[in-house]
Length: 338
Image (cartoon, rainbow, N blue to C red):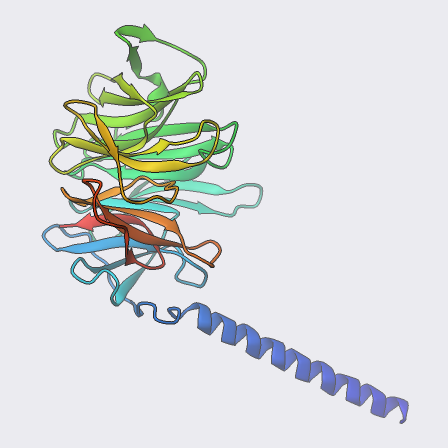
């Protein structure tokens, strides 16, 4: 075979291999943009946070171009076809027509982390720089307050060393409490100060002032009850993380560490009048801030079995009975829109 013929054969082989590679990339992208086998159908469209509807909003998980996009489904069909917006977030929550979207995008030297406050049409109203990686987000029932937590160092609540920063924003006045660590702390009836204080997992009451959160110090976590107007918190009980206040405001759902020093939690519900608690039927370790779908039912995210970087939403009765069931596959950061 002549040299020119060999070069021609080599060129044809390269072109064929390139064509196969391009076809595979396009096929993989197309597959990534489709729901998995038996999964829900998805279509691009307008997602609204308008009050008065009965829907579930969330972030899509898994791989593909829809990863992290705010989506919604009717509350009556949470595993059915979903509408997917153009807004992408790492964490999301919404109430009464106001949403908070925590976003992290790659930058030239470091990640660009922002909190976006969005209106009922998912349009950004204000944005705020974040001091670290997004972790938790909550909007008060009235839509007036938004809270977020970021990791300033460390990667998770299960890490040996981590630091958080939690902020509370008034969306009417735009006053930002950039760090709850500046609030006055009362522990066991006395003023408390320490260098190792961390807060995370805010949940709001309906009065637009009271909130609950986790306070960590001296190797222990505490449930605290706080007041935005008085800039103060009071500890209530230990071993409480990521609290979520029930719609009737009588109970707290939270993750309880079941083994000291290990990233293993069991979801519990506590009666706020007695501080007595009980475990829920979910026996998997839940590293999430659960959402009350109503006064009887909780939703939370668990890793998708056999799929990396994906989560599914599950639900379980709040009274400790029943059994967990799949609510919405390929989803995280739920918000009940009503």
